[in-house]
Image (cartoon, rainbow, N blue to C red; front, top):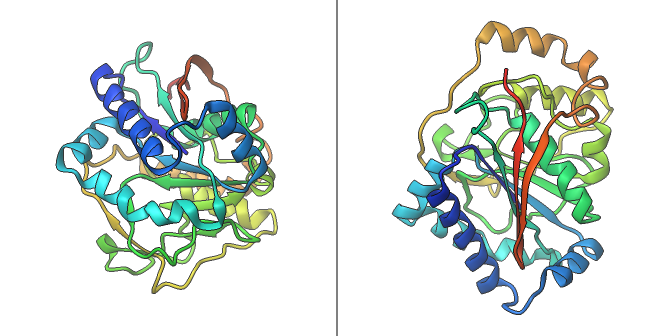
Length: 276
C-alpha cells in the first residue's frame, strides 16, 4: 500500500509513519519481519496502493479520528483472499521547487516502478485515501478487467457522475497496468488524469468492470480542495490521450529517488518528479 504525499513537514511525516506502523503491527503479526512480508506479498495476490495527495489533510484526519475510523471500517477487506499488503509512502519533494503543482500520474508511476523493485506483485489498487468503504462485500481483489470500485460516493448522492469515470478507487492486474502504460505524466494540477486513464484502458481493448452499485459505496472524508489545472490545457491533452498512450506514461516516467527508508513493515520513498 502506498500513500503519496506532498508535504515535507517532518512532524506530519512522523505521524504518518507511526500510524502505518501501528496499523500493520496491530492487524497483522507483531513479529513479522520485512523479509517475511516480502515473501508473503511475492507469493500471494494483493498489493494495494492508497493515494494521499496532501499530508496536511492526513494530519487533520488523525486529529479528528476519522482516518483511523475509516481504516477500521476497511479492516475486514485486508483479509479477503489472504491478501497481504505492502505499506509504503511515496512523497513528492518540495525542497528544490517549493510547493509545486501536484501530478498524480508521475507519483503513481514512480510508486509502481519502485514497488516492483521490492515485490513481484500481481494486483495493485490506486486508492484515494479520503474515500472510506462502507460495505465489506465490495471485495478488494482484482477482476479479469480493470476494476473501478468507487461507484457510489456520498458527496455525489451515491451516483456515478458519468460513465467513463475511473477515479477514486481503481484496481489493476499488474500486467494490465503495464499494458496501458500506466498513468499519463502530462497532467499538472487536479483534473482529467483519470479520464485519460479511461482512454488508455479502452484503447488497449480492455473493459472497465464495476461491482454492483448497492455495495460499491464510499464516504468521502472532508479535506482542503485541490488546485485544478486550466480547462483548456486538460481538454487539449484529453483529445490526444489515445495517441499518447503508447508514447508516454510508465515507459518514460522521469524522477529521482532521493531517499528510501525501510522499516519492518513499510517503506518510505522521497522522490523528485520535476515541475511544470
